[in-house]
Amino acid sequence: MNTLTCIVAIVLAISSLANGVPTSTSAPDQPLTATLSDVEEASVSFQVTGSATLDGSPVKGIHVNYSPASSKESAPAKQHRHTITDRISSGTFAQTITVNQLAAGHLYHFSFQAINQDDELGPNSSEYAVYTLPETPNIDVSHVDETKIQVKWSSGASAGNEDLYLISYAQTESPSCNVSLSVATCFGYQYNFDNLVPGTSYTFTIRSHNPSGYSKAAVIDYPV
Image (cartoon, rainbow, N blue to C red; front, side):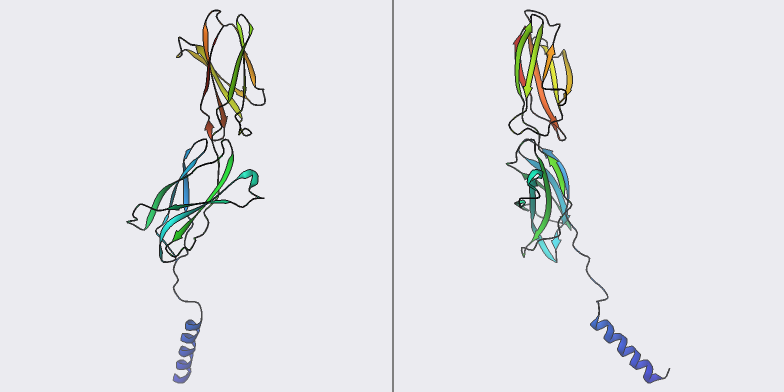
């Protein structure tokens, strides 16, 4: 290959690089990550972390998309916007986000996107499925005979995802000495407590349970 041919080859190579894909590119923006931090009857909280910049612009907030599982396919996701208030002093941030006014005992799907100063949205995070805690159950107690009491219960207004109920009872004057049992929903919604002491008051406590945990307790005192 002569000198002229080498020069032409080098020029063509440089032209190809100039018109093609750049030799160095910035890394793509990564989705946010979230960790469930708290669940209540009407709220869910996440700890959300991510990069402090999006497309070269500082991140100013987090866009939350959420919807109940029952309407996920037929209704658009609701949206909640969280503004970052803490100063970001490093390359990443961590923010606690709480979504309120949710229905008790329901399954919700959540996802998160960063928002930068130019109001651009980053990539969607993974989807997180969370049940809100169930409502406090309703409880009713009645006599069967002089040593037996029947306890009946029912779910709260937002029922549907309970898998069991935790029931405990004790003599009202000795609450630390109690008996507890778990009753699966397939078993039914009542239980007979027998061999009780006539003339003694008993305290009955019941909690609903779903995949996220237990409800607040329903408590009733009843004399035998």
